[in-house]
Length: 454
Image (cartoon, rainbow, N blue to C red; front, side, top):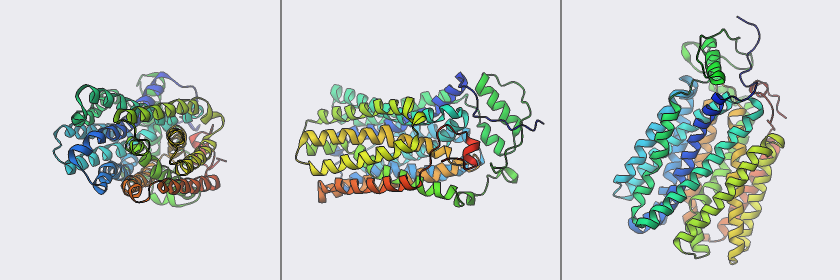
């Protein structure tokens, strides 16, 4: 057995690594599609099912409750049984739940199915994030983890296009078919994921060194081949305990991992608290604030999402690996704070509200979210990565639950002041991120496990 430690995230990108990353990124596409397909479908759901503001909040929040529980409950499974089983099963559950929308008769059935869809998406997050980080070379890791956010926005754009197509052709009363279309992308993703190997980092953390090297060789050459002996796991990556048990969770509550957990929980929790609510209710809010027609509000939503895609591509292809995650997170959050303040200050001025909305959506989806997608799997060792990402994503989706539950009622009661409150939360988020967030660009996973970030 060689004494040299195998650096799995060294070297150049290969076709196999790119394919594995894209099948993981596809989970983010499905997530974005799911949220925006509901955003458009609400234009048909509200007049038919007539939910009051509280129940409407439950319709929006139920998927986020599912995401929070899905991430929390399946994060440990990705550490104990591997990334691949959860990676595949999550999409299977999503397909079945999406098809169930065709048979919805009342708002409570809709809420239950939204929970199931959310659970599947939440379950997919820890496994997908870990696989992207653990298969991609360190110098391209930020680009590909960030591309998950771009895929999310492309999914959102596709959902808006499908919604407009169906509603224009047959009317908003066909919202059930719109909701069920999410199964199409998920079925394709299931097919593409069948060839994804287990993570070499997970295998090595569990003492399966030969399998780890075989999985890496498959990813980098496309050939399984006989396994070669790999080196023992480095001392900084805690090995699994006997019987296939993952490393103890208490590792996450020791410095420096505890600080990273606090920073990411605050950052992702606040980002989702206001970001998800603004995005989900954007068509409805714009319709009330600026009073355009129904389809005009959808077209505006498509325009803001397209702007976010452009910004996200710029961030992923140039900024995230040249300037870094920390700059994106702090700058994007500060811009969101300024823009939501302007929405409050210029509430009676339509053009100012529209511009501020567009920039807010763009910097959250095309900037601040991408920093999280890079940070979440980078900052934790392979032996606890699934649980760490699961816990942080659970906190983030809990923020989404609170935001989507509160915004309809808060907007009814406070009107424009709602956006002043959102601005204050964004300022708080920017301050915490400035004080605690590290920079991780260009570092290998082993360097990050040794706490060498700046």
